[in-house]
Image 1 (tube, helix red, strand yellow):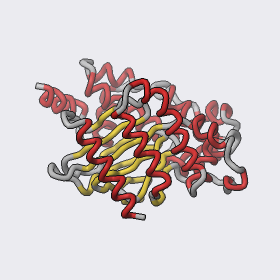
Image 2 (tube, one colour; image 1 turned 90 degrees about the vertical axis):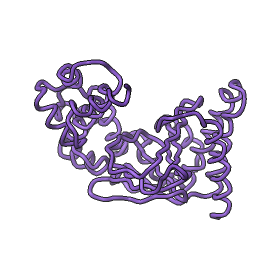
Image 3 (cartoon, rainbow, N blue to C red; image 1 turned 45 degrees about the vertical axis):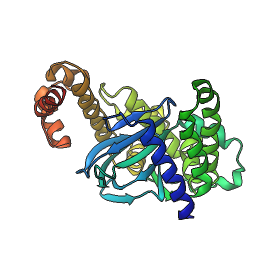
Length: 304
């Protein structure tokens, strides 16, 4: 099986490197809106990120993904599924200028999954009611890899082909996933009324209003849960409490704004929901290991 996967990998690595030979950045957004690539030319220390609902595959290299207090190592023979917005720390373990780390990400929505689930035998999708962590790892196989290769290679075709064919191939990829071991995992989060689906709604609510004050009682009522049940299951799925999750969203958005907008640090603190610029600076430094002022200086030096 690995021989077939290695052949697919080699084909994709060559295609991506030829297609994006002039790209200097670490992230590449393809012409297919849900498909992107990540490149790294050296190993890294742990970096804080926020996964969106997606399928991730490493084409070359390896990395560790942190969830809570655990680190999960994965390589080109495994895939990662994120069911919702999941905070994580990632560390690239194998990468160099000669053999860079290269991965691809296919984003999806739970509505996409639900649309596919309607065509799957319910007997295949039985699951336990209790919630589980929002990251799932499993071994890659040729059946899943084949449509992924076809999706990526669509980038070498005319735009009208990409626009028409990509939705069908993406649906095929999701159909393959829900018919494998990952099916029960995706079903938990996509099916209306499950505990995991309710937590997804809570995550979405916090994400859409991250700069506003979080009221746990109101949030729990909105998703029809007790506050204690919300707290417990939220932490199981994301590894963070709702308040910690909101804080991470705020700080991640602040970091993005520091990178792309010419705004005072105190104004950014206010925009993401902080009333105190000094508290914002302390919490930013604690999360990212550098102060907002130091990070902004680094961004300006890179741009000059």
